[in-house]
View (cartoon, rainbow over the protein chains, first blue to last red):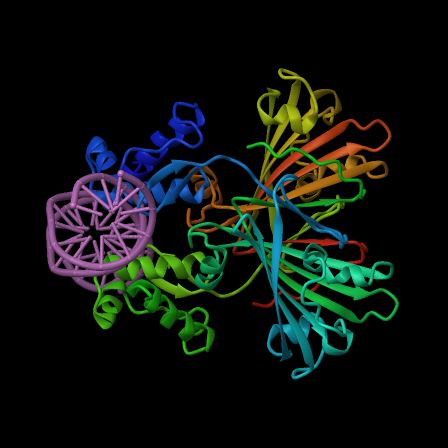
Length: 243
Length: 243
DNA sequence: CAGTGGTCTAGACCACGCG
DNA sequence: GCGTGGTCTAGACCACTGT
């Protein structure tokens, strides 16, 4: 027997996918919906939570629940390209970078193949598109390989993309992709719900000649507006992503 | 101010990551925990739900909540290899395949670059490891390119992997990776919670010479036990995945 | 201010696992 | 049957958004 919340979620899901409710539309308030379906607000909210997880609706505190305008805005392009983040062409993208010197610990040691305590430079990058956080990256580079001067303002778009671009020719890139829910911290920095899945990419770049790991990057992208694309043949022709 | 459930989740998270609670351990019952933290059961359960989403605990109806034994068992290997699913070496993997003839519709038409109504063969694959569903794949192939005989029993391991292996030389593979929560249907076929993120991979294989799309595959892997790996240099040396 | 979603309570009852 | 988690209720109160 389907539970009440599943039934409600299905009903609303149908209304959305059939176009009866259109992108941008506001749903009736939760109390109204609860009355309509004759359930308590808690039950109704759990149905909405499911739809939110599927990326069908968006909850805005104090305003209402809205049918999502389905735009996947950013595309992560695998394979260690210089610019590995793409967003909608007409939107401004800016990045904040915080640089810290740390010492290798935990799984960083195995990722970078260094011994515990090795000096590393950590770049904590947050990319925004029109004030909305879009991606979170923690990039670790052995201290002696880090860019000498910490650039404060030099073409942030470039800085964002990939420090691996510093090693363009002889780099071997290995990307491990994973889906999970965000940690509370990640959710708040990306300003997303904790119920929204994120794409977690661990990218390790090694120098082909020496085998030395020159960069490890931990990227977190909101699942509802990010895709990662990998192609054997590196000609990327701006593919469409439909729902 | 952190909410009660966040505080509780954090506390339990710490106990798990510090090893105070070990993999396989059973947590106290929800009513006991609710008493300890002096919250209602609903609040406590929402804290546990967060941990479940992070893959830290596993809920078993009628038995209890358990600290997850962290085993990422399957690794999807990108780049259109013949065998693109790897699991733990000593476990039996078997696959069920259901073949259906359908006609192109919706986004399938744009994926396969065919006109609506074109005849397609759909392979609905479900891979199991020791009775536990592991991955779900919907593979679409233009009807005239589909294997002539539908093999009923021929080395299911091979059949699973990739029909693209039929076009080994001149294939260009484009994989789009996405993180989201499963649809209720996917959750029940994979026997996972709807709160557990899945890795959704859309793989399109095209013949390099003709440019014709020879296969489109929609793969769904449970985020808690699957990773996808992409390497520029295709030597894969069984990397470790730690938490 | 009124209206919205967010958090939380203190219960009730159901469904599952196991002895 | 008993203990477990799963669903649900009918409220209360808080926090945010708008006017």
